[in-house]
Length: 406
Image 1 (cartoon, rainbow, N blue to C red):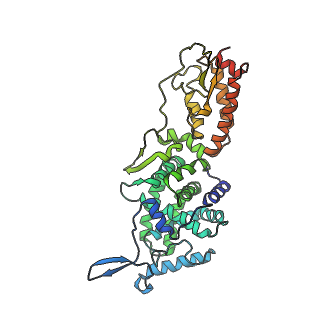
Image 2 (cartoon, rainbow, N blue to C red):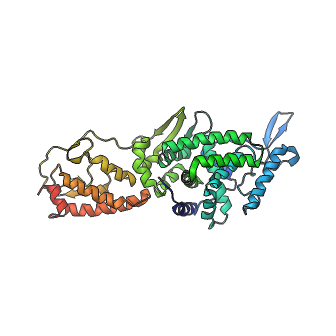
Image 3 (cartoon, helix red, strand yellow):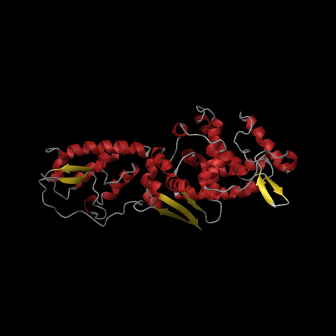
């Protein structure tokens, strides 16, 4: 699955429209991903032995010199790249770049390494505050990966739906590579004492990600900003490459991209990913059925599946046909029991000859060949099924004769 530069920028810009950007993107991302606060500046009361988080900035003299210098270098980088001040919103909860802020800065460097950071900023240029939009997406990416950097993590809610989508959209191998690479980034970022060392850590991770995976991951993060699990799932069919990812999903991870909204939780133990789904959310299990036995003519009419859902195993007549059709329907996020795939036919008689299935497969394959998103595929597939249904139900047409045996 590839995400081209032009469609990436267009999709990011479209997704960002109407999103209410958070005042504190770090806090908002933490809430979205269910990650607890892990850093900040605190006031220690020796009498009660309690620590209270400080909202205001501490004095620079109280901070480690290396931390202060790293922060100054970050601010100089912002100005040097045309973004004055705290351009990535790393200092909202701390006067210096520390804790998760280090990981967010390294992530920005990773995205910049493949020019994806600039592509995102360019896509956000039509917004009132492009840098706020960039920061919201960046913090969402960072804290999502932080969630997976702890031992045997479990994600729920929106994070779980995002994980299921990432596994299908990016592919299992790429997903594992991103997680493993980020764990190394965390180690490198924790050891870094200068801005240059932190930038090097980020750029190494950027090479691990690659430009295509970085774009895909940035798309998922942009969808997640200010969203819910259900809202996230509803946007998945509009993502570029979602149709191709959906077609591969069954063999790739046992997941249907159209069903990610039903994911309840995702856990990682060792090298295994466990996805907990709600009932009826898994991909339809292929029935142990081949070509049906000859049936009598149905004079009153029969609800006929245009693309057969009854031929899963038998290899005669170039079968099985149902798995071939299922791949097309997966691209569109549709079931073969969808009303669009059913037409009432008078005089129906099965089973149908090889010539019928060949014609249907060719028509549906041609119709969906160029679609890039599940939404696009759904539209063209539904339209083609409508045309096929009309021809099948019309007496005297070639398709009607093949279905009725006349």
